[in-house]
Image 1 (cartoon, helix red, strand yellow):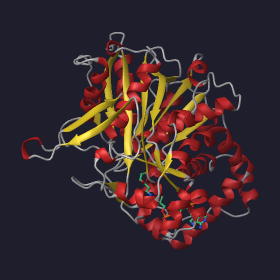
Image 2: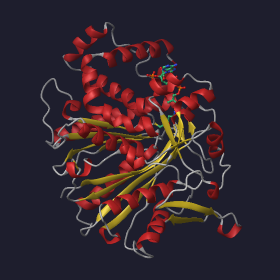
Image 3: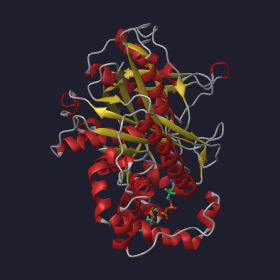
Image 4: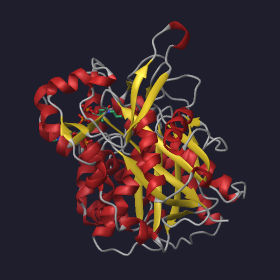
Length: 464
Ligand code: COA
């Protein structure tokens, strides 16, 4: 039985901090944000929003757009790394909000859990729900997988320039109009690591940014190796001599903690794949330098990062490599459209990869490209750490879903925060009733209990 993504919807908070204002107030070169990281605007949550109401707003949009009733939905999973409760799952909050619109008990048949593994858990949730459908357990119902996060870092930290917030929801069924997953090829890698983590009770993560970036690329490469073995042994893809697996992916979506990380990760994977092929000779000729090797090629991530001479040479090599015509073609045709939304919105942790997929569909369609039958590869990464590589094929009915996608319209009118407003929000100085935007037809947080017996209970309303 087929399984895949039938439709996709987003909810992005309407407040943002502009990269130029951020750079100005932090004493940074604005070019570092805009060109170095690919960050133009970062979405920031209002004082009456949390990751649960971002998720519920995305779910309501996809249900209303597709005229779905709660009876059409058999499972609702929420994947997040912004959880605010150690026990109560975020999907129960989301169902509570949706039932304010659809009626008390309307979702009582609908199972689900909150999943956690930094930014990769949404991909595990998609895989598990696709398998629920493939196993014919769905009883004709669809699954909703919603990925929702607030990427918030300490004031003045290097992560602060890669913030963002939002939710993406995907409707999964056995006759998907958008993308059917390739069966039996999903591959993972995993390793106990401390590149990025958020201990109990801490609102912001502890981040080793450069370490995390390199680990991300290594883990995705390992998952890609496993994926390659599976596509060949399952007969899904026939690889001819001189080809790489990336030649068989028309589009590649990468996890995007910031937009340029997609570029960096793609360059790393392409280098890794092409190094073994006859075409590499010509690439090296065009670059005019040999590929640098670390002093200790079998060393740890720390030893590679600490090898300053290697890091500087590798940086130079990567810059030259990404300017080659062969790499530019891969970048422009397979990845570039997926980065546009990230530049405008910022980091969405679990939702970043899927916002990228959504962005790729919209902006590739606008180029007039026929997407039917195109294979889309996904490189998902979560700190801590695990990677997942999988793929799917765009379905004949995709146009019906993609033709009306309009990122700007879906985000809605945005308010550019002043620096003072940004700091007040970041430091949680405003109560829900002091929110900056007075939204209509949206779920908002109105109260978090502080009394001993009901501490942490949250109340939400649907703003008519
Ligand atoms: N003009 C143009 N580009 C500039 C620049 C300037 N003035 N200054 C720096 N840059 C470029 C750098 O060359 C670099 O590009 P490269 O990646 O192609 O080499 C890029 O901007 C970033 O600069 P860098 O010095 O590496 O930034 P940093 O060390 O201050 O911080 C992060 C960058 C991404 C490591 C940091 O923001 C972070 O930790 N973010 C959190 C990431 C995260 O969440 N990871 C976990 C999940 S995967």
